[in-house]
Length: 70
Image 1 (cartoon, rainbow, N blue to C red):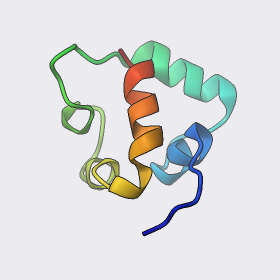
Image 2 (cartoon, one colour):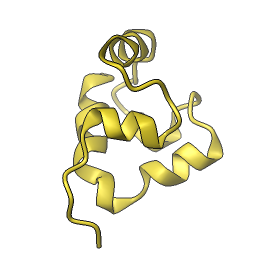
Image 3 (cartoon, rainbow, N blue to C red):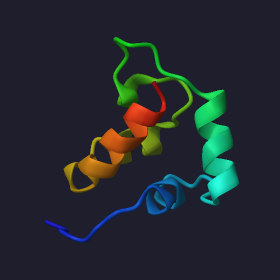
């Protein structure tokens, strides 16, 4: 298991998204999650991104991004 720290920027980079501060803010502003929708089930992810989001090694920063998208 990978125990290194994963930042929000590194998560966006791993997902193949722009990872600059402005791009992350814009992504969050343009994509909001409904309260009962799981982060891995939103329509803006492709299949590879959905599988990556389910990776438990990244769960802490994925939870952080989930909170920011709500």
